[in-house]
Structures are given as C-alpha cells and as structure tokens.
Image 1: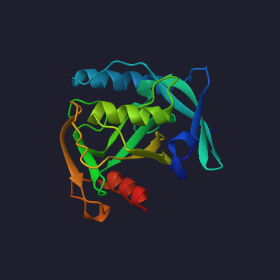
Image 2: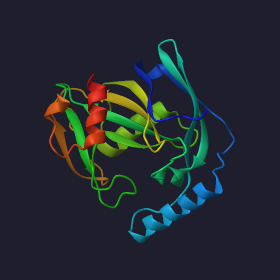
Image 3: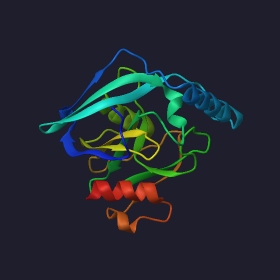
Image 4: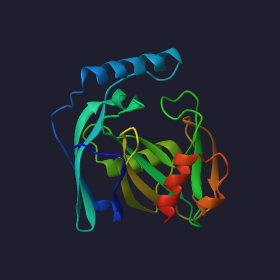
Length: 216
C-alpha cells in the first residue's frame, strides 16, 4: 500500500482496540534510498550524534475496524526514516502527555539527538522496535523519557507526515500530582496551556498543528 501524507485514521480508540501484526519479510529499499540512508548515518557520526543503525518498523497497510484500527507492519532499516524526502513509511509512536488539569507536557530535544535536535516536541516518541506492538511503544517511550505512566491512555490518530514518516499518535493523561522526570534526551521542559492557541513561540508549526488536531 502506497500511503500519501495526511491524517490516515482518526480516533480516539481505547488502546486495546488497536492491534498490529508483523510480516517476517524485511523491507528492501531502492538502491537510491539505501545510499541516502548511508549518507545520513555518516552525517550523524560527523556531528557526534548516535550513528548506530539497526531495524525499526514500516507500516505496510492499515484498516479501520469497528471501534479500532488494524496495522500490518514489517521490519525495515531504521536509518531510512532520516530521509527528508521519503522515509519509506517508517513507523514511529508519539505519545502526547497531559496533566490532570489539561496542560500539555513539552520537552526541548537535546542537541546531540539524531532527529529534531534543539526543537520542542510534545510528550514522548520514538521508533517502534521489530516485533513490538506500537501501543506498547507509546507506553515504553513515556516511561523511558519521562519516568511516568498514564492514568489512562488512548490512541488518537494515524498520521502520515509530508516526508512519508508514519506516526501512531497516542494521548496519556497523568494522575493528579504526577511529576515527570526528563531523561538526557531533553535539556528543558515545560507545561504548555490547555488551549494550543496560547502556546509559546517555541511551539513551531508542526507542533501547533498536532496540538490543534488532538485538542479538536
């Protein structure tokens, strides 16, 4: 299935209503895409960012189901996601985080990271590991990056970004009094207002668009 940029499916769905299955066949990129991935890894090494490569997940297809969503995934080379023009339907999970009173957790990504260095992002996110349930990825990234777990978590949307990276977007609501502790992937964090229209200038266009979609 060739997937075009846009909102592919819109929830919210209970986390248990999003299911995934894995194909054993590893995705074979074109020679041009493989060379671009090699160049991207080399560029990371030159600027001192983690430059190890491995396997991540690619979205093969998706299908809405009554009250949920079904995903078919396959392993693919992780570095293919670094392409600014075509990330080959690489799948990542992004978990927006909200306090009990509706504020949004935002973190500034450290400058040494491979993706989005120095930019502010919502909540937690990262690559889906081979064989991993992407819903589990949402919960794992939240725990690893912020040391917290959602009191309740929903899956909000499946989105294809302009460079054809796919995001499974979740939302975790924290219990009253829960206080996140950032890992070394963040050098600053803040709680942004419940209304995305009131977010600070640090929220760039893509982040604002995501917030507006999730708040709708």
